Amino acid sequence: MINWKDNTPSEAPFIASVFNYYLSDDLVGYAEYDELTIQLAFQMPGFLGYESFKANGRGSFISYWKDMESVKNWAADAKHREAKELGIQRWYRYYHSIIAEVKSLRSHNL
Image (cartoon, rainbow, N blue to C red; front, side):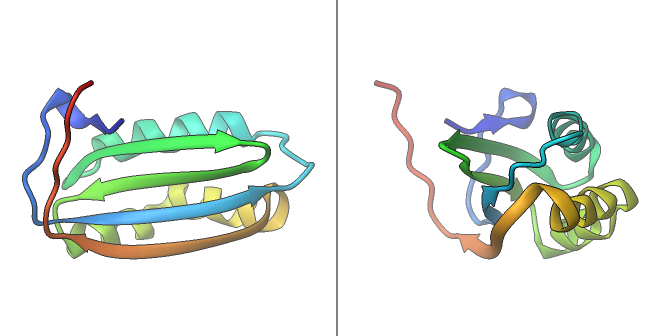
């Protein structure tokens, strides 16, 4: 389920930044940076929301953004860049990122 900023679903089109990863065994500081970067994202202009899931050391974090300029600004954020560098050095065995344009969104509460 998407955690929308201000609990307000966004209307397409918008951008999805998909981060898929496989965690390493060295997770010192990971949880703290994970929470910090989520809090920072909520403060970034153009941030719309996120969803995240983890199981058996693998995970996905999908953040939603108003436009590519917002994604680029988030990528350039100093604390986010620091977290990415720590991830490369310590926390991830593997990761990949995908930037995609969301042209349609349908959701339904069951």
